Each structure stands twice: as C-alpha cells, then as structure tokens.
Length: 376
Image (cartoon, rainbow, N blue to C red; front, top):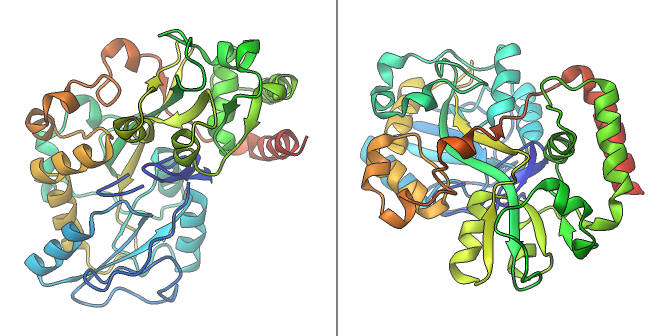
C-alpha cells in the first residue's frame, strides 16, 4: 500500500499509509521543524547519525504525533524526542537500508505489509512482551493480525479501512450500500471517481471486483485486473496524491479513500460519508517497531506503552478517527466515536476486509501494468 498519505494526510503512493495525533490520511506531507519538541523533517538529520544517549529518534509518517505529546514525553523522561518523516513505506525501507538496518532510529512506523518485509529482511527486533504491559489491554483479535501473528515484531498504532468516500454534494442519489464494481461501471459516475495513487490498493480493488485476492492472484489475474481498469478508464477522473483535499473540494462523486480521512472531512463538510464496499475492502494497520540497530531500546518500549496506553490511545483515536486496539481506551471514548461503525466495524463488515499481501513474485508485472494504466 503505497499510501500517499493524507491519512489525516498520510499514506504514500506505492505503499499503503495511513494518522495521528494531530495529523493529516491516504498523501505525503512534510512537517516543518518544531523547536519545542526537537522534531525535524525527513532528511534534516544525516542518514548516518545515530541516536545519542538521552534521545529517542522516530521515523514516522508525517504528522502522526501530537507535538504536545512528544514534548511532554520528553520532559517526563528526560529525553529529546526527534522525529524524521517519510511519505511511503518504500521510502522508509530505502533509508533504513542506507543507515544500516535502521541505525539512527529507535522506533519506526511500518504499515502491515512492510512489517512482513522487514521481518524477512531481519531489519526489526523481536519484541520482548514482558516490556509491553500495554498488550494486556489489547483486544484479542488485534493480537493476531495476518501480517504478524502474536505481535512478535510490531504493535499496531492505527487501524483503518480503505473504502469509498461518497460525496452527496456531487452525487446526491448514491445508494446506502455500494460495490467497487458499481463505482467502476455505473455510467452515472463516469469521470467522477478518483482512485488512490497506490498500485497495491487499486489492484486489490480490481481483483476484488473479479472475485480474486492479492494473496492467491496469478500473473494472469493481475493482467486481467489491469485490463479491466484500462477498459473502464473513462470512469476515473484521476489518481490524486492526496485524497482529503479532493473530498473537501467536492471534486469527485466517489473517491477511493481511507476511513479516517473521510470521517475527518465529514465533521466540517456536510454530505460526506464512508462506505465499505460489499465486494471487499482493505484493512490496514500502521505499527510501531524497533529496528535491529536501535540505540535506546528501553525508552522506545516506554514510548510504546504510553502512546498505546488507555489515555494515549483514546487521544489518538479521538483526533484521527483510526481504531485503537486498546479495549480500555475504547471504553473511555465518547459514544459517537466508540459506536461509530466506520472506526469500529462489526464482525460482518470485518469479514469483508483483507490485508494487502505483498507479492514479490509479481512486483515487476504490477509496476509495469500500473505505469501503463496511469499513462494511457
């Protein structure tokens, strides 16, 4: 999922993305330096620099963290919290390779499919659960995601869904339930839909329309899915790098988008709603993980426990509209949040949601077909 984050402004093209303590996701924002917290934008810290004693260095999606939280955490634990930002999982992976399997960072925030890749490449540490008491408050289902059963290598911070943003200001007669197939084929939406600038998300959608899955797709399935997209290219208005501004500006009737982004826009913009397509949707998670060469591991564990604890997780979900796995945090949320089926979908809707499974064996054909789709 190259998310081009907007998630609340986040996720990046080519990776999947998406959130934050005052953020803003499905596009890549660059954050300005903040003298109070010591945070700096991506590239401001030399790639070879290692975290010094008394520092906690984080490599994260832009605007994932509330600056006040970072400042207070630093003051409470006598550390300087420094954050660098990336706009895609692939960008993060490239820099980690350059820095020597993550030397210089104590915490990183990979998305679900990238966790699998980092584990395979032996770039992140196995977690010591005895140092993560916060996991005792996690929902049992959240302890065994497909990409990391048992949470042995990463802990989910934000859980969201990729579905359809419906803008009733542009298309007032869209039914309550919807499918990807209808979005791509109904002439009423011709030239009025946008798709994420994310090959994995768009392919997952096209495969779902054809009753296929990323996990079991063959090369023929992938080519057929892209052929379908090309055949219905007239439906597509574009592939915006950030979805939230497009929704805010009423530029599409139906937009492939991240759940938290849609809810955030809908707070101040009437006529915006989020739909989980009947023919399937992507579920995704952005996670906290510790690189193999992290210098300040103990403070990294402390940060994870506080960020994902009841108060930290409650604040995070309230701000970003992305689901927390902490059951105590959910219980403390306002009812309009804890009872929101978009943030906390029921079992029936969750059964239609699937994580993106990375397919290295099909990477070349996917990249080629994606380039052809966008260029034609």
